[in-house]
Image (cartoon, rainbow, N blue to C red):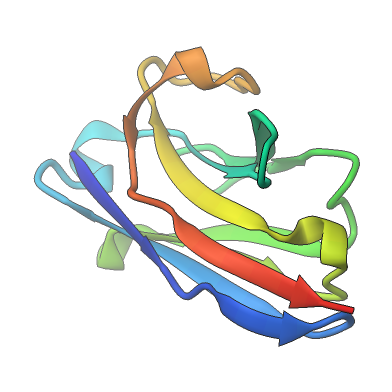
Length: 125
């Protein structure tokens, strides 16, 4: 599976952005992959942001984004989304989508075996 993340940009604090992650190759529905978003702020390690199971069921979020971000997917379009509201300067990072190697609620990047190239989100104060 090849993943391509897009939709990043510059936004003021309090604003919103919606990221997309398009998959090509083996489709979501054929292989039923759980997916996640991670982010890496300048000078910091990449960290977990949000997770969604292959069937779009119950989702899971990092505490830092809970209540502000929403992960969703459209298997018919082979796309995963991350709606980000009430953005803060500390949300500034490169955001990556990732496919789980084995389905499960994983927050460690080692459990994901395909990654998008990343899309930069910059939140100004």
